[in-house]
Amino acid sequence: MKNVDIYTDGACSGNPGKGGWGAVLIYNGTEKEMSGGEPDTTNNRMEVTAAIKGLGALKEKCAVRLFSDSAYLVNAVEKGWLAGWRRGRWTTADGKPVKNRDLWEALSELIAYHEVTFVKVKGHADNVNNNRCDALARAAITALPK
Image (cartoon, rainbow, N blue to C red):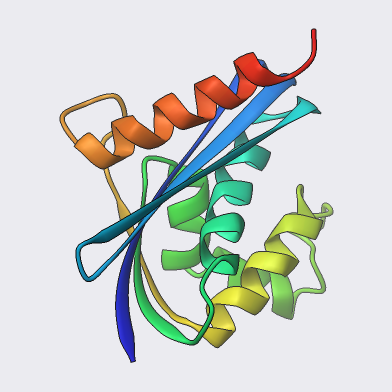
């Protein structure tokens, strides 16, 4: 099984507002950059979308370390919130519908297929690849029609 590192980030201009996501995939010394944007979204949606797009770009089952500065994304998986939401029929502990269910369902399928470990990194700090993802996400916002 191939070992792949994926760095992801999401950004929003206004929240909600124009949003962008960026991902950098690294395998065996080769890097691939990806990005995209949406005209009306939230920062959290862009963070999860970045992970979905990065994992979705893999052509076969891989062992993945996914690096993100989003506590929302990393904690949902690593602290078992996502598994709890699935068991609870997509409701939170207080019985409310899970926000961004469509994205969490898509991510859930991808992490069930790949072997994914989520790693929280400090945002806007000294992580070169996280900073690259941030720049990609911000450039995707700028590229959206006015």
